[in-house]
Amino acid sequence: MKAKAIFLASALALAGPALAADAAGALAGYQAEARKADAAFSPSASRGAQFFSARHGGEWSCSSCHGAPPTGQGKHAKTGKAIAPLAPAANAERFTDAARTEKWFRRNCNDVLGRACSGAEKADVLAYLLQARP
Amino acid sequence: MKKELFAMLLALAALPAAAHGVRVPPSPAYKAECGSCHVAYPPQLLPGASWQQLMAQLERHFGSDASLDATAQQEIGRYLAAHAGGRAAPAGAEPRITRTRWFLKEHRGEIPATKNPASCAACHKGAEDGYYED
View 1 (cartoon, rainbow over the protein chains, first blue to last red):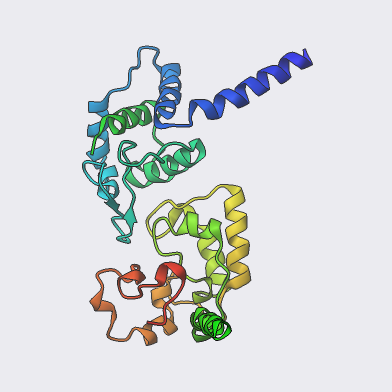
View 2: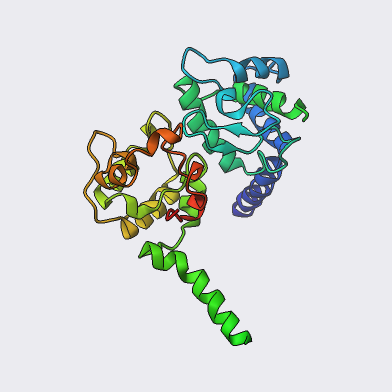
């Protein structure tokens, strides 16, 4: 029993980072999360594009800081500080650290939408970012 | 000759330190977390009480969610407390460096030259490295 639990824990520990070590892994993770709520969910780049440029009733959209298309350098809407490109094709470092990805979704969704983003919304945005080419 | 050159280089390297009085050791966590949206302001520009106030309301940080995980929150809080300045706290509900008496005196007549007072680097080319003497 104990051995089984240890095996399961180490398998999860191995699978966790491996799954989210790149943008495609991050997308797969959010897709799995979305399917828990809606088994028929399939990520959509066009929905993601709309979501990314919409203001959602507030002052900012994602593209206010990350630019449109998000393949070039962005600029913080308030401080003017340069932001490295968000699309993985333009910046291979993006979405390679799951904790960092979650931290920024938490902060930025709160800023743009005034709430947390759902797994489906994150999956759509990832699908959009993954097909963006510089 | 070589020795002299070395001494000269050493003196040059120490110049910013001498000019600024105390140079604060950089904190990778502070720079990574706070410096991704704006210049990682030198901790000595605000007193400890002001930093404490800022750190306690990071979810509402000048209109943005800048919340941290517990580890980063503690580490950065300790760093700011250890290197905070001794000047008076700025006026206003949110402690802004640009509202300290010191900042206003130093920048009299100069602020309109930049669009945003938060972009120190527009004028202070060494701002990213904590150097503001120019």
